[in-house]
Length: 186
Image (cartoon, rainbow, N blue to C red; front, side):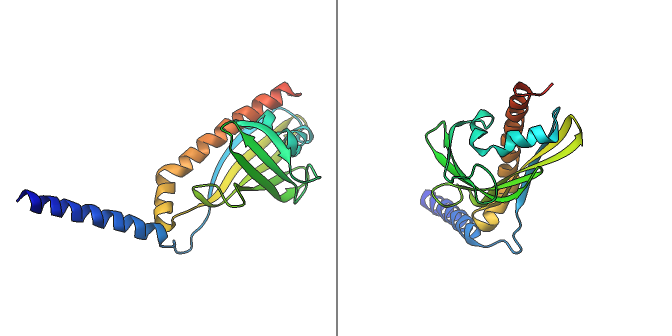
């Protein structure tokens, strides 16, 4: 009787594990990207805020956990410019500018060892600036990503990943505001 119960439990566990494996490889029909975003108001001119975020080699001054920035291209800005972020844990992340609209937008493709970092199938970081007045700028920070693992990844995204991404963005926004305040804000 005890061995029959153990066999049934083993079968249930096997079916659950097999189901998770299958869900991890089933592509999500019409899979779309997730956009986690936060916004903040900086009491500086749009030109000054653009200067702060567009100097790609200065990101260690406001990106949490980044110890230093190494430019991988001669250009420090513009489409195609690339940087390596050296993180406090010893890891490295490369970012390459995929979109650059002078004064308003920067999009950076994020990679680790020439592929998206785990748990992403694709990931980019975006800055969007909107001047509200001569001394106020709205800054929108977004992490745009596709989770790995198909349908299972989409479920995990809804349960866990998106809220963690928003918390990380809030940390970046807070650090950017502090950096802005130290460098010419009111």
